[in-house]
Length: 307
Image (spheres, rainbow, N blue to C red):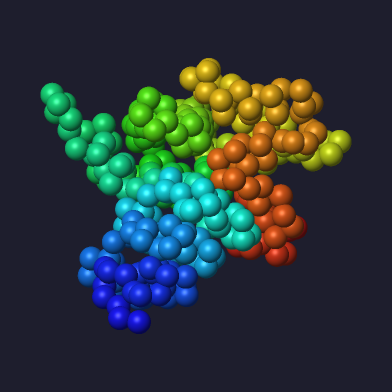
C-alpha cells in the first residue's frame, strides 16, 4: 500500500499511525506524530481511530502518547464503542485505566498563568509538574497518594498543598459545569483535593508529619487488621463531594452506605472501580499496603509489607 505521514493507505482506510499503534511501535508513532499525523483521523472502514488501535494493542505508553497528542476519547466506531470500551472488550484494562484517567498537562498549566485581574496565578508553575504526577496516578490508594506528596518537597508544604487543593476544587467544578460534563474526572479531582487537605492538616498539627498520616491509613484494627481510619477517610471524601445531584455520587453512596465498615465492598474498591473502570488492586499482584502493581514478596514502592 502507498503510505504518507498523515494520509490513509488503501487497506481498510488505515493510516500509518493506526498501523504503528496497533503493532505497538512506539518510536514510529512518535515519528509520525512529529511529522503531523492526524491522531483523530477515523477514515478507517469501521471508524476506528489511532487511540482505539493503541488500546487494542495493550501498550499503555502508546495509549498515553495518543492522548497527549490530542486524541479524543469520546469518538465511537461503527459499532458504537469508544477507545476505552474497545480496550475493555479485549481485556486491555491497563489501557482503559490510562484513558479514563488522562488529564493533559496543558489543562493544568492554565492555572499557572494569571487570569483576568489576577496579579499571581492560582498555581505556582513549579508545582504544576508534581501536581500533574499526582493527578495522573492510576493508583488511588490514599497511602500511595500521600507518598507521592511526601516524595516532592515542593508540594509537601502547607501553603503549597493549600494552593494545589484549591486548583483541584476548581477543576472539579469545571468538570461538572462544562457542556460535556465529566463526573468521573470531577470525582477524582475532588478525591485528590481531600487527600491534599488531609496532608496539610497533618503538617499543621503533627510532629511526625506525613509519616504519621501514612501510619494512620495503614493501621489495622486488632481483630482482623482492617484499616478502619482509611475506610472512614474515604467514605468522608465521597460524602463531601459537593455536587449532590451527580449520578456517580448517588451510585457510590448506594454501594457503600449499606455496608458495615470492614465488609466488602470497601470504599477504596468502589471508588477505584468508578474512576478507573476496574478493581485491579484487589488482585494478588498488587501491594496490599499502597496498592502498587507488581509487588511480589515485598513492595518495591512502599517497602512496608510482605504479601
